[in-house]
Amino acid sequence: MFLVHNGVVRQTPKAKVRQGIDDGSLVKGMEFAYDAVKVDAAIAETYKMDGIFHVRVWLNEGRLDVGDDIMYVLIGGDIRPHVIDALQFLVGKIKTECVVEIEQK
Image (cartoon, rainbow, N blue to C red; front, side, top):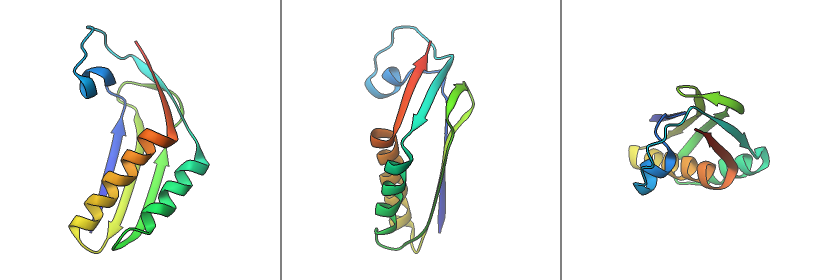
Protein backbone atom coordinates (compact mmCIF):
# COMPACT_ATOMS: atom_id res chain seq x y z
CA MET A 1 0.00 0.00 0.00
CA PHE A 2 1.15 3.54 -0.78
CA LEU A 3 -0.02 6.87 0.65
CA VAL A 4 1.00 10.37 -0.43
CA HIS A 5 0.84 13.65 1.46
CA ASN A 6 0.96 16.87 -0.59
CA GLY A 7 1.36 19.95 1.62
CA VAL A 8 0.51 23.30 0.03
CA VAL A 9 0.70 26.93 1.13
CA ARG A 10 -2.71 27.86 2.56
CA GLN A 11 -4.31 31.28 2.63
CA THR A 12 -5.60 30.52 6.14
CA PRO A 13 -2.99 31.31 8.84
CA LYS A 14 -1.57 28.40 10.83
CA ALA A 15 -2.71 30.04 14.11
CA LYS A 16 -6.33 29.90 12.95
CA VAL A 17 -6.13 26.28 11.77
CA ARG A 18 -4.20 24.92 14.75
CA GLN A 19 -5.24 27.17 17.64
CA GLY A 20 -8.49 28.79 16.51
CA ILE A 21 -6.94 32.28 16.71
CA ASP A 22 -8.52 34.48 14.02
CA ASP A 23 -7.07 37.96 13.68
CA GLY A 24 -8.70 38.44 10.28
CA SER A 25 -5.42 38.23 8.39
CA LEU A 26 -4.74 36.08 5.34
CA VAL A 27 -1.47 34.50 4.25
CA LYS A 28 -0.03 35.86 1.00
CA GLY A 29 2.95 33.54 0.90
CA MET A 30 5.67 32.00 2.99
CA GLU A 31 9.41 31.62 3.36
CA PHE A 32 10.21 27.94 3.68
CA ALA A 33 13.49 26.25 4.59
CA TYR A 34 14.52 22.85 5.89
CA ASP A 35 17.43 21.06 7.51
CA ALA A 36 18.39 18.21 5.15
CA VAL A 37 20.30 16.30 7.85
CA LYS A 38 17.25 16.28 10.13
CA VAL A 39 14.99 15.23 7.24
CA ASP A 40 17.33 12.34 6.37
CA ALA A 41 17.33 11.25 10.03
CA ALA A 42 13.51 11.35 10.12
CA ILE A 43 13.37 9.25 6.94
CA ALA A 44 15.79 6.70 8.43
CA GLU A 45 13.65 6.52 11.57
CA THR A 46 10.53 5.96 9.43
CA TYR A 47 12.18 3.02 7.63
CA LYS A 48 12.54 1.31 11.03
CA MET A 49 8.76 1.29 11.56
CA ASP A 50 6.88 -2.00 11.16
CA GLY A 51 6.07 -2.93 7.58
CA ILE A 52 7.57 0.14 5.88
CA PHE A 53 9.64 -0.54 2.76
CA HIS A 54 9.50 2.68 0.70
CA VAL A 55 9.89 6.34 1.75
CA ARG A 56 10.34 9.36 -0.49
CA VAL A 57 10.32 13.03 0.52
CA TRP A 58 10.52 16.16 -1.62
CA LEU A 59 10.62 19.58 0.03
CA ASN A 60 10.41 22.95 -1.68
CA GLU A 61 12.35 25.95 -0.38
CA GLY A 62 12.52 29.71 -0.62
CA ARG A 63 9.66 32.14 -1.25
CA LEU A 64 6.38 30.32 -1.90
CA ASP A 65 2.98 31.70 -2.89
CA VAL A 66 -0.48 30.52 -1.82
CA GLY A 67 -1.21 27.28 -3.64
CA ASP A 68 2.44 26.33 -4.14
CA ASP A 69 3.56 22.85 -3.12
CA ILE A 70 5.51 22.78 0.14
CA MET A 71 6.20 19.06 0.29
CA TYR A 72 5.40 15.61 -1.02
CA VAL A 73 5.79 12.59 1.24
CA LEU A 74 5.29 9.06 -0.12
CA ILE A 75 5.15 6.02 2.16
CA GLY A 76 4.94 2.42 0.98
CA GLY A 77 4.31 -0.50 3.28
CA ASP A 78 2.68 -3.85 3.81
CA ILE A 79 -0.69 -2.95 5.36
CA ARG A 80 -2.80 0.19 5.74
CA PRO A 81 -2.36 0.73 9.51
CA HIS A 82 1.45 0.62 9.19
CA VAL A 83 1.47 3.04 6.24
CA ILE A 84 -0.95 5.48 7.91
CA ASP A 85 1.11 5.47 11.12
CA ALA A 86 4.34 6.05 9.20
CA LEU A 87 2.87 8.89 7.12
CA GLN A 88 1.52 10.64 10.21
CA PHE A 89 4.81 10.15 12.03
CA LEU A 90 7.03 11.44 9.21
CA VAL A 91 4.91 14.44 8.21
CA GLY A 92 4.58 15.41 11.88
CA LYS A 93 8.31 15.06 12.47
CA ILE A 94 9.19 17.09 9.37
CA LYS A 95 6.76 19.88 10.28
CA THR A 96 7.79 20.10 13.95
CA GLU A 97 11.54 19.38 13.84
CA CYS A 98 12.95 19.83 10.34
CA VAL A 99 11.47 22.94 8.72
CA VAL A 100 11.05 26.67 9.23
CA GLU A 101 7.85 28.22 7.86
CA ILE A 102 7.46 31.99 8.05
CA GLU A 103 4.03 33.13 6.90
CA GLN A 104 3.84 36.43 5.05
CA LYS A 105 0.61 38.33 5.55
